[in-house]
Image (tube, rainbow, N blue to C red):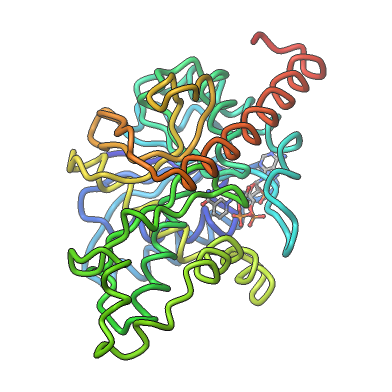
Length: 327
Ligand code: NAP
């Protein structure tokens, strides 16, 4: 199976390259960067080969600034774009990154129109929309990573609080990958027990101390905190990416929260990309699952919709006016 990473010289791109290279079913990895960073990605590939030799596995890694190299990829991971700094909202990157994503998306259509494309560049919900419109690929084959990472963070925080293995935490964050994310506490369960019941178990240490609002705040600011402390997020996004890519390559039909193009699956939410649970398989999104929310969650979801829609329209207009583009 062939996987290409565009923006492979960056923190997320290079860490993803390593986590994807470790997968036994990836046998061809293509790392794409700008010409100015070609030495960096060549170095990455040599470093990865050393690690693979130690692990006793092998694959072919191509490095290039030529988009032709992505031809016939099964999956393309798009991470190229300016990264945010601490306390800078992802949406501030929208105009600058839209141009980068638009250009690469057109090239993706040219060289590898049958690929599944995972958009990572922020603000991911808006960039996913740009990639979808500019690539001309089907809405099932282009989707974004964002709320899957938020959901993993939520699981980790809840597991640590209750001192329960992370696999026992079932939760989901949907909506925007940003301040308007919607953590679905109404559907969160620990070992199958709804969290609202679990916190009433007085004999479980720390159960009653669980602060829902504070946990939500921590998930929202998790990325910013990591960027503030170490300069970038790497392992979390990289392993969230490889989780999703593996599901596509192995046609696993796992349910992940991805940024998907919505057309009234949730009443009144149209022509926008937002995080929603979807069954992921070899064709990308196999099915979107219109999830049930309580009243407060629905209100937050509609706020996310309004915010992302407004910014998406602004960015598409900007691309149209400034880049003489075709949509
Ligand atoms: P980074 O280390 O700064 O890397 C940025 C990458 O984009 C580099 O490969 C860089 O290439 C490339 N790039 C920058 N400007 C470009 C341009 N004008 N044309 C073509 N390529 C360009 O950033 P990062 O930490 O890897 O993050 C990459 C993106 O992913 C950011 O937008 C970030 O916000 C986003 N992100 C998303 C998630 C998520 O969950 N969706 C999580 C983490 C990060 P050069 O080396 O040539 O400069």
